[in-house]
Every structure is written in C-alpha cells, then in structure tokens.
Amino acid sequence: MKLISVGFLLLLATSVQSAPLEIISEYLCPLEMDSWNPVNIDSFQFIESGEMRILASRDFSFIRYPIKSWTIVIDSTGRPISCDENIPDNRLFLSTSQLGGLREKSLIVRTEQHDTLWTCFLEGTNEYHCIPQATELPDGGYLIYNPPDCYDIYVEIHRISSAGRMICHYSLGTDYLLDLPEPVGEEHPQVWSLRNTSSGDILVGGSVFHSYTDPNTWFVCLLDGNTGNPLWKTTGCALGYATVHDVIETSSGLIVAVGSTATIMDSEGFDSPFRGQRMPFIAALNDTGDLQKLVILETDLANMFYNIIETNPLECEFLIAGNDRVSNELVLLRTIIPTDPEEW
Image (cartoon, rainbow, N blue to C red):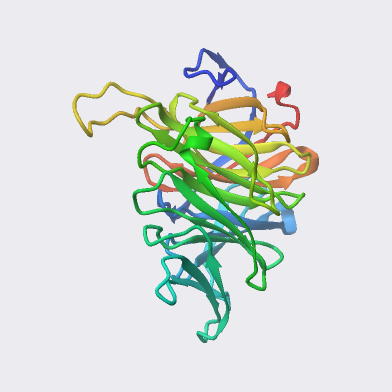
C-alpha cells in the first residue's frame, strides 16, 4: 500500500512516502455501492469481544422515497462477519411541493400515515431546482441542499428547525467558491456533505467546476449556523480532478475531509474521456479552514472514499466507507489519523 503526499494545493504529486498514515484494516462488505447514492456509515457501537456494530444507510437522491439501512458487524480486526438489512422504522417522510402557484418549493414533513406535521417554504428556490436532499440533525431539524436542474451556478442550502422554522439559507455559488468576479455560465457546485459543527455552524463539502477556469475542484466551506453567511472556504485540485464526498469535525477540532481524485488526461474532441484512474484522498484542515495536509492513497481495494466517522478519539481511530474499483462493493477501512498532521 502506497501513500502519496501532495504539497499545499499543488496540482501534481511530487513525492512518495512510505507510511504517513497507519491503515489498520481494509475489507470488502457485500453491499453494492452507487456513485449517486452510496452507502454511508451513520453510527456505531462497540460490542462484546471487541466487535463493532455499524448502522449504515443509503439515502436516495429524491427524498420522497424511503431509506434503506443495514446493520453490519465487524470483528476486532475490521473484517465484516454479518450484514443484515433492517426493517424500516417510523421515520418521517419528506416531500416537496410548489403551493399557491409560487415558484418556490416547500418542504413538507409527513408521518408514515401521511399526516402533515409542517410545511416550510424553501426561500431562494425556483422551478429549476430539483427535489431537495436532506440531512437530519440530532435535534430533529434538517440541513437541506437544493440542486438546480439547469440555468443556475448556485445551490440553495437551508437550515430548518424541528418545528419547521426556517433558521437560515444561503446561495452557495461557483463565483464565491472559485473567486470569479461575477456569475458566469451554468455550472453549479455539487454538494456531497452537509454537517453541523459543535458550534452549530454548517460544514459543507463537495466539488465545483467551471469550464472557463478550472478542472473539477474539491471544496470545503463553513457557513454561519444562524445567518447562513460563509465564514471561510478552502479549495484544491489534488491530482487535477477531485471531489470531497464527506467532511467532519473531529473531537480534537481538526476538520477531516475524504474523497477521490484523478489525473486529467488528454482529450481528443468533445466529450472524450479526460480522467485517469481514481484514487482516494484524505485532507486535514484547521478550524479556520487552512489546509494542513492532503494525502492521496493507493490502497488495496478502495478507489474512492465516500464517508468517514470517528470511532476512537483517544486513539485517533476512524472508520471510512469506500468503493471497490473492481466489484463496486462497499469497502470498510480503519485508519489512524493523528491530530497533528505533521505526524502523518
């Protein structure tokens, strides 16, 4: 297993290090991954004999559909020993509607019996926005991402309380992320990760592309949890084509992002292939968004990292969900990520 160290926002890797990160284990789990609706790790608990019980789920892009979830048990070495699909619980069902002839969309929260609990207008949306995607928060509220169908270079991000009150919303645009002087074109950012921080702010991760300026660029940004206004952003190209699929705030305050990157290949004509083989990466940022380290991994199985969760803060241990390049199955990878990136 090789790990490639990428300098601060360099386009190409320039050196190879033997072991800047400790990979504890990497195993396949028989669940098919999906590039648009991957299996994510939601929670975990340690059980007897050092085994770990993991709750994993697949949210569909269109949130009106019910969720699929599984309970995965791995042994003390990280090897999956069981994987069982769960019976759906009494989760709320979300849907959207354009009410009263207005172009803005509304989020409607219903029970399984289809009783409406509340409706919230999604400010800033229009008829060109697709059905929102939701992240449920521990307090019962939601973070909402509204991807446009076309004609927009921005996405709407909303924070809604458990009672359906709009707390804040922000139009996250390509012009802000790529420091463009004005909105140009029709490419909008792809948001893959929405999470609350310990201070109640909104951590956003994904990719942004503009044909006039950049290849596919990964980004992480922090939005104020009360106003939605951006506090900082960080972008990078890694090997030249990169996406952040998940970003978390760790117990130490370090921000860790995971995703995938690939080299840009020569293209001959329109719509020709332009990516090399994908490789997973891990990036560390401090609490003000400064990039501390970015490491690209050439692992035995995974070529993309989709999800990360902290499993043992005292030992700096994390569990990562990835995608196998051959079988397209879930990869569970345990790793040590030191709180000081200089130790990587």
